[in-house]
Length: 216
Image (cartoon, rainbow, N blue to C red; front, side, top):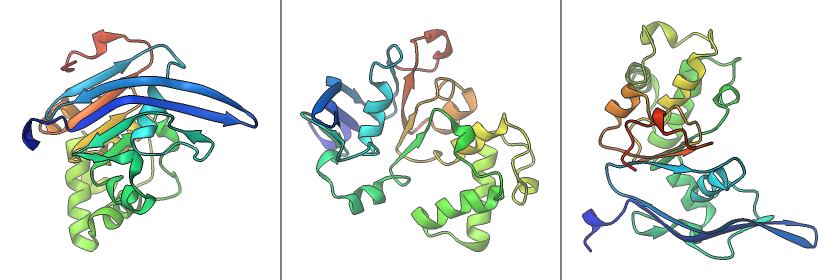
């Protein structure tokens, strides 16, 4: 199979265990799934079934070494993420794979402006500063539906409903967007602007009527 036909993300036999003192709990037991290029996929299960743990494993955001992987491979663009050192994972986070957490209300600091918070990410991962960063921030805010984005650069969070959309701006134009929020993947604006990208949505209870835009 050539590179274009290979899944963008290929998870095989992934297990996740957590150690508490002398005991060990197996939270995920040999889960397998794949996401092709251009697909929007939902991993569905009851609360506590391991969806979020599986997502956090992809970016290696679990509390290692208390967490471990007794088995499994997570291949992204042909590389096994579980074997990569931390400096290489840092290069992937935000550049190639982004994540929207369950509680985006806690992801942004109300004491810092919109421009400062998104600009920090653009500087860290894309090297953008000054006017170039400001233009990119306006573009991202426009894509996720923030009204009058130019006027919002120096503003602080005014409405709780805008916080999730601001967080979504961090995930625009990355190859893979992981979302732990069940409403994000189904939003038409996000779907349209990420039409060439790949997403996986980790839903709480399998309410598929919210997922008309899903491929699987």
